[in-house]
Length: 342
Ligand code: CP3
Image (cartoon, rainbow, N blue to C red; front, top):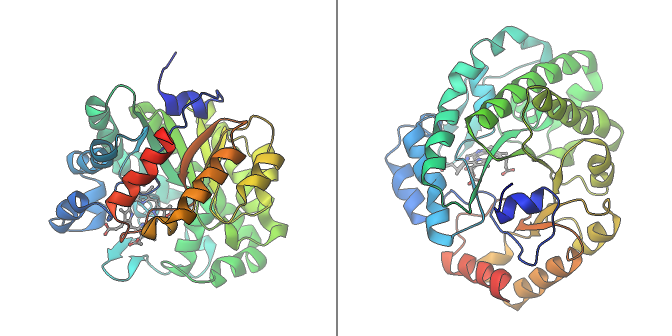
């Protein structure tokens, strides 16, 4: 049906070319991104400006000719659309209104969600008009647990104390909040699929913070419910799950969550993952983003190890987490050339 290398690979077909894209590719390591960023009033209205969001989504494709674009947006648009007063402060990061207990949020806050997030759909439609025919477009959302960490802490956090305390002390209320966030995520992903996203990715960036005893409740089951909800809405796009820092939990996740492909962070040994993940499961990852800063022989050795470890299954090359702002673009180009041409 499709001849986009990224999509055939994520859909389970192995080919002799390894597709590649880069998490946070539309971002601060590109000077053309920084130029547009500089003239924005604030980060949220930047994300919700379809023309500008589309322009920066296309920048890394124009520069590197990657196999997939990801729509420029943010996982915190969902709490923003739930009226949690999300702001991005330069030098600090995201800030949200304080929430003492999970039951302070009720389902009424979902009323305007799809209306408020409609500009992301617009951005997807516009972007598709300009993408090269062989480039796929990815839509995404944050997974509920990761959103809970930002909601509980009122921003970024080092050790996620409040979110973890909620899990132990406010389990019943947290369960209701999970349900609300699951509904919100199904709506947001469905909106993006309807607009034309060809693949969906669920970022569970702080899966690492969940105690092993709670992994199923807080990570794997919500992911499964979201996927069922998206499917019930009629969307057939492949879904990539990225439970960052989940360690050996990724095996149970791959078997039980219903994702079509698993994103691996750089804490996972590709040799281990290649042997232990379900046979033929498509994987994405997992070069340490910091190896790109110097791009020495260690980086090329690591790329070889990753490619070798996944040569028996469909594999999309990516970093293990987002590319960092100081990464030199020449190094990115070297990495891409090496993967494509050896
Ligand atoms: O190119 C792409 O990957 C698309 C864009 C994208 C952004 N955020 C834009 C962005 C994606 C996929 C995200 C996801 C996201 N956002 C995650 C999950 C992925 C991950 O990194 O684990 C998370 C946890 C967030 C939340 C978030 N957004 C934080 C904590 C911050 C501030 C920290 C920082 O790096 O400044 C953001 C801001 C953000 N989102 C930026 C970009 C390009 C940088 C802000 C800027 O340009 O001023």
